[in-house]
Length: 103
Image (cartoon, rainbow, N blue to C red; front, top):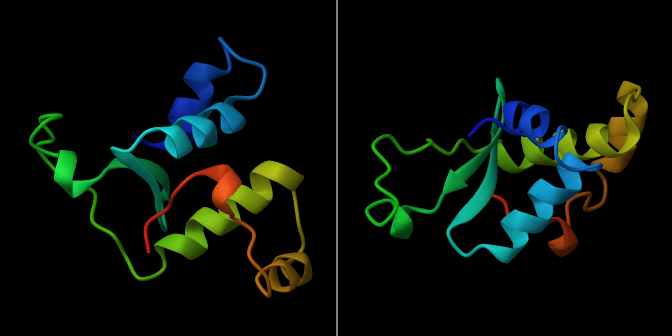
């Protein structure tokens, strides 16, 4: 599921939808965060596809982690210059406290 759409839905129920998403992803063994050029998604892990009746699995790209990291950075800071993002890419942005992501 697209994280932007999920954040919009959760914003009616919780004060911090992004924190709720990352907390849920961290606590559920069946999902992870993945990214692509068109956004960040909550993806069902392949081992759970049959159990959760997933018809079309999200295809992971080599840059998935970078897309999730960028989304996390912008969710945390709102806006950033290219220099800010480049500096942030030198270290881990997205750690265990924020859930799991595709690699």
